[in-house]
Length: 197
DNA sequence: TTTACGATTAACT
DNA sequence: GTTAATCGTAAAG
Image 1: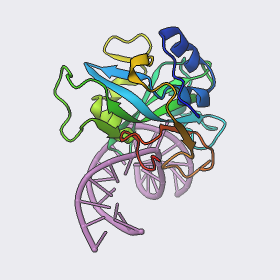
Image 2 (image 1 turned 135 degrees about the vertical axis):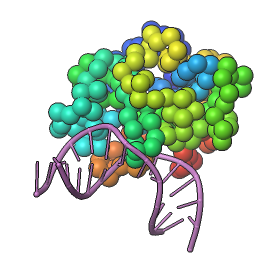
Image 3 (image 1 turned 60 degrees about the vertical axis):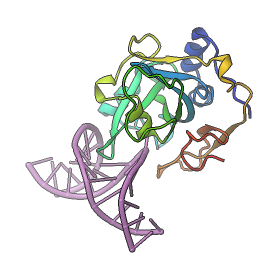
């Protein structure tokens, strides 16, 4: 499988409005920016209310409601009391689907604010993505396609991601629906959490 | 009201 | 390989 990320804003919006698994694959190579931190997304996972690993599965909870927002909205939550994980809501509003951003590489070395200590060019793991972007719970619910400070951008042709080998496999760190191959990553990238082959 | 558990990571043995 | 850190959420009582 080869990476074919959207190359303009309209294609990105259409991608996020469609199937969440397609969106997870297509977000590889897209960029997320926050206050001058620009990261290239290299690892994602899809979630959907029809499978039990999703926070929206068969539940009417606060978390589930946040996954009912229109596509392109952020769903940020605290994991293990420590890590802020950022998801992009996907599909038609009310579908309860999202893509978790699990890994990235730093896109621009000249960030406007100081790099987070210990975070270098490679940012493997969803907790580290949140840390590298300085994401907090206050960013939950923002529209990432139209945001000023926190924004999702389509891929750049000059990044060289298009056409690169894209791998697919089971999701990480879950105990339900463990066999669904809904994790995507750019083969060999240092910004991918293990396994990354 | 109380309890148990993560869409994780770092630091151990 | 195992475990601790840490807290919002949700299920149990």
